[in-house]
Structures are given as C-alpha cells and as structure tokens.
Image: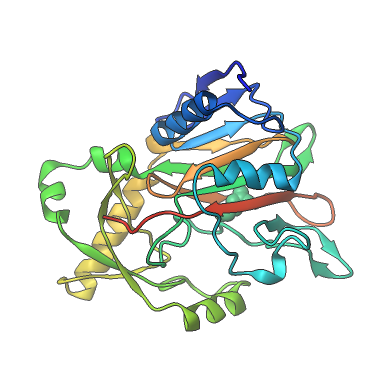
Length: 286
Ligand code: SIN
C-alpha cells in the first residue's frame, strides 16, 4: 500500500525521522525504497509512533536482509527467537533481557567475519523522570569522522587491517560471563581499518577501543595508539546524534557507518525499560 512519507533530518550529520509510515500495514516497494535510501544516507533512522506485533517487526526487518541468529539465546523472546529482549526489568529476581547492552562505543559484532548490516530497536517501555525520557542512545558517524581526517592520515590508513576480537581490550564487566563464552567460540577476525559502505560507497573508520587489539604490520604500542586516536575521532561531539526515546519508536542504525553507546541513567525498580532488538545480516567488510 502507498503511504505518504514525511521525512525530517536531525541537525546532526546523521539521523532522520520518518513520520506516518504505519509498518503494521504492508509498505509498497516505493515507500520501502525511500526508507532504505534514507537509512543508507543518514545511518540512523527513527520510525515514530509504531504499534507493531512481533511478526510485523520481523517482516519489516527481513526487507533489509536476513535476520541474524541471537548469541545470547537466554534473552531471546520466548516465542520469537529472532528478537532479543533488551531490558532492565527483573522477574523473580532475574533479568528478563540483556540489561547491559552498549556500555562502550562500538559497532555491533565487529568481531565477526560478516558483521550485521543494521540493528533495530523497538521501544515498548521507556524510563521517565519528571517527564523526561531516560536511557537515550548515542550515535557517532564513522563516515564523517573519516572525511575529517588529514590527507596524510588517510594515506597512512589505506590498506591497513585491524584485529577484532570479542571484548578484546574491554575490561571485564558484569557481562564477563557472556563475553567469556563468546570469546571461546569466536576466533579473532581482520577487517579494514577504513571500510567502504556497501550501498553508498562512503569510506568509514572501522575501529573501536573495546574490540580492536592490533593492526597488521604495526608494533603493538603504535597500533593501540592509532586505534585510540581514530576511535576518539569517531565520537567527537560534531559527529554525534543523541536519540531520546519515545514509546513506539522503531530506531535502526547502520553498523558500517555509525558506532553507538547506551546511557545508563535509569535504575531498576524505579525505572522500566523494554526494547525488542533485531539484527539484520551484512556482508564482509571491504
Ligand atoms: C545496544 O547497544 O544494542 C543497545 C542500545 C540501547 O539499549 O540503548
């Protein structure tokens, strides 16, 4: 069905909002193409005011690619294993979902051979305090950060590859058990330090402090200093967008061109936060 799309851009270098597409109804190919193009160009896209069943969310995600299997199967939605529950809610003393997602700046699953193209988060419960939404999610443009580099640095990075490993350099946190389990299963992978966006052709920095342990051909000290320098560049304020959640937001982000960070300014049992999360498969970075 054809729906009128009303698209607004944020003031940041990334982010756009699409009003009025009712995803509960089938989207025409034209509407979908507009949404997909906006997503590719703006890296973070919010579809507001959605009322979606789980199958509707899954169907929409599938239009972007294959849905990835969830690693943390104990936090999968009980009826829909494609959906990961991200939540601080406890039932019978146990977290019902992943309560710790996004503690450090990262791009989802960069430690896999073929990291996801996109991640979707659908807001069912948003913590509030005095009328203000808590638990915002921050994004930073790895494409704008690359563009801002001096030419000499771009030449230096050309052809370099970095080693990514689950929580490679991250200090053990409350998620240590999960990380350990993942580490055992997941060998380290090499990805270009500068990857090319598969749809727009833009160059994007592709390193983060949590997962990147080394750069091929560089001594450890030099490699780590370079990773830190580039990772800090990505998250400079001029490249950021902060998403303030509303119930019914379906937010999706591009794991090639942005990194993200969750904000933990809410606490159980005073505040409740519940999101449904889906990751859409991607391609081998080049
Ligand atoms: C995530 O990193 O996947 C979750 C982000 C959030 O909950 O804000």
